[in-house]
Length: 257
Image 1 (spheres, rainbow, N blue to C red):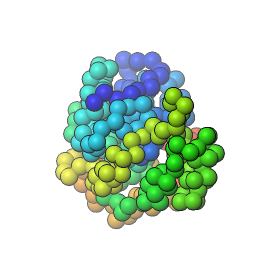
Image 2 (tube, rainbow, N blue to C red):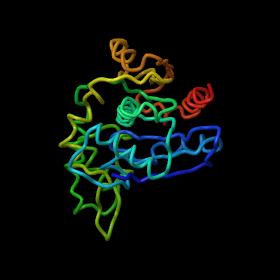
Image 3 (cartoon, one colour):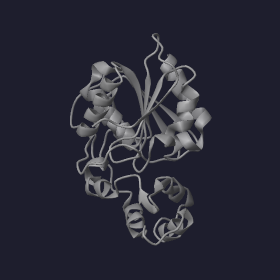
Image 4 (cartoon, rainbow, N blue to C red):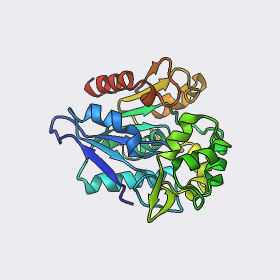
């Protein structure tokens, strides 16, 4: 599957392009601040993964398929090698891609995610999204009221509502809610069963987040023997949105190192 891409910056013979991959329920726009900060030095390829944003929908969704999507998309753009930055689910996709196509990855940046399976964390979000009656709402505020009965955090609701769009006078979610729900076990599972990417890898952890824990160290070093880690204090799982300047500085320093 060819993915929707948003490309900025100029191709530069001395630097590899940088690919940005968003997380679950998101779209390329979530990483727009990072894209803008990098595009003065790099060509930036910001993607919508399958079943998200403006990319095609499919009933099937797992990290191997998603890695193939990314390879096909970069082939279509004649990109042989790139640096990859992924947040959360996008980080797991980046891991699967790097282990499957190690020769195509110059550097790997993983934002607040480890190569492990996680317990389900999005049950209330799925319940909330499924509770919104798209035929009865007239605007996002109506949807927000319905969503708020299940999703208490205003910031999470505003993030989800970015994917609510009006098409031919009716509202719809840009993401494929049914496919995300039916493939959710795959998405919270390990990104890939085995393999090694021995190139340079940077894990960036939110200081207040529990997505990367000390007990994940063995899994990280087994798959990524050259991994290093940085922590941005005072941030949660959305570290790139909470402290974009600190996040971008870590990314730029690593890309230039």
